[in-house]
Length: 379
Image (cartoon, rainbow, N blue to C red; front, top):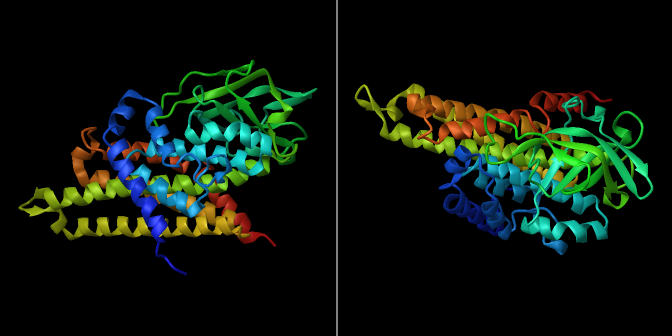
């Protein structure tokens, strides 16, 4: 058991850190304020290999590990949690095509996804099925060489802007075994979008409902066999949970560093805030929780890379802990800033608003507890 990063890992960690600091951080407050989807900034990240971190290199992927991805997303999120989180979703959808697509599908879709000439979205949640994902109702009926889709997906990051929608649809019986996975391309007749949602955070990525009305999708766009879609979706989420935990960690680390700097400068009652033991303890607790979250994420990523039987449990544990700890850290950092933390002139409120949703998406933290408990109690 070695917690030392390799020279290569240290190199791309530093590359991601410098890129985030120089290319994203100066612009992130403006992106948030204007609710701007920063396409050029995302493509700049793709030029460094960050659009397909654990996609094989045959069609432009970087071919790194889940642990490598966790290192990169933590660094990117120190600049902009929302943009890093969208990039993590793009990575997840691209990996699903790389892992479960055939040669023709991979050659067709991946090159433009790896450069982010095309953007990708992951479509599982529906208006009537959130945590109960296996109850999804979007129907895909086979008609010759096409499926005819009817239904809707909710809360889709990139909805209305992405070029590729990796969608889970019902092709068979009720429950998980009746779900298949289709790649739906923007511009397909019958594909439309709801209004852009107004959100607390994650303002640098558009979120909208994705609507299918007699939408004809070629059978050739199906990933895997009929009935394998739910398994594909869950395998995608295992990695996605590590990524989103790492994004929480990055935002929390940036908030922690801001709070530490503020405590060293701000004076009250004739002393620096850093001289008050009660506030020292707050900072110590934040640092301890973030270090524990990082270690859990690294363990989960290593477990997933190895294909361990307990990898899903490790991913659920890490996601639950890291996203809860990340929000607590941002909230405590805001408190340590006092009234200034509530102002948009300081970065803490942006990080807090962006990390809050991580306790809900990629499976709520309540569902993470369900996954963990089922694994613990199985016989």
